[in-house]
Image 1: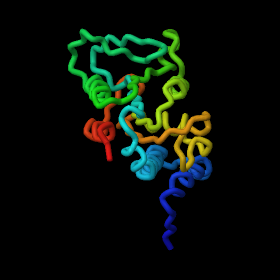
Image 2 (image 1 turned 90 degrees about the horizontal axis):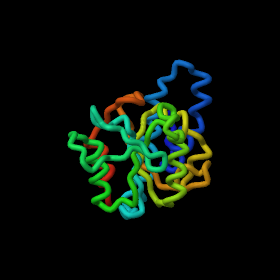
Image 3 (image 1 turned 30 degrees about the vertical axis):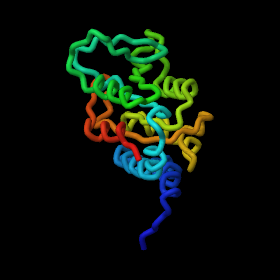
Length: 202
């Protein structure tokens, strides 16, 4: 017998059972499970996300997508700063500039707080929560790895029908684009998928 759940219930059920399943099945493919959670979440929140005006959205991109040779100028308040005189071919900068041109309320390139603690960077989760608290967007598009998502955000307290990050006192309509791997220094992503999510509009 196949159990069929309504769409609004699939996401919280998957999130709730993640930790118990990991304890029962230590060899569970965590990355595959997280990707299933993301697909369910993106489906559930998509219509509300695409109806949200660009100006009421925030985009968070990871600095591990920066171009080889990036100057990596870091601001503890703003994350990675793209230099106006930079001539490196950089898809990360292209995505940032495209989102801003569309009218996104803000775009931040999130830096690893673990690797750049000496630069005064917060942990990535704390940076994200602080930025959302300051900007108060209705919707957020985040690009991150499966490890970060499951270790920092995959909590029942963070998921509700109204939005995510409820455990932090915030409610935002989320969409997620997962990275191909989990390397904090250098990673890759499906750029077409990311661009489609950035442009998504009703």
